[in-house]
Image (cartoon, rainbow, N blue to C red; front, side, top):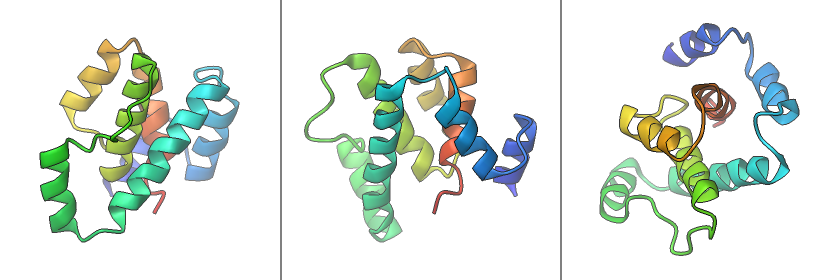
Length: 120
């Protein structure tokens, strides 16, 4: 599976290892970890809807929350977390580029993707 290959490519064996690594990692502070959790919860709401509705609403609304976070970098992190979770850990290149342009690093991309993949 692609998810297993991705986890192996970042050198991590299991999802629980990844989750612990992200939780203990200095890559994200406490507020950023809360924003990632917020993104996961928001994505879980989307995942409860039928796929066709998610696809249509996602395109129409760009999966944006009605109340974006005030901090642009945290909002970029939240949006990226939602996209990664909906894509099961494999974010589209455009989302990665936007995340990187918000000031995050490739290591942080991998950390978010690994922590949110296969969380269903």
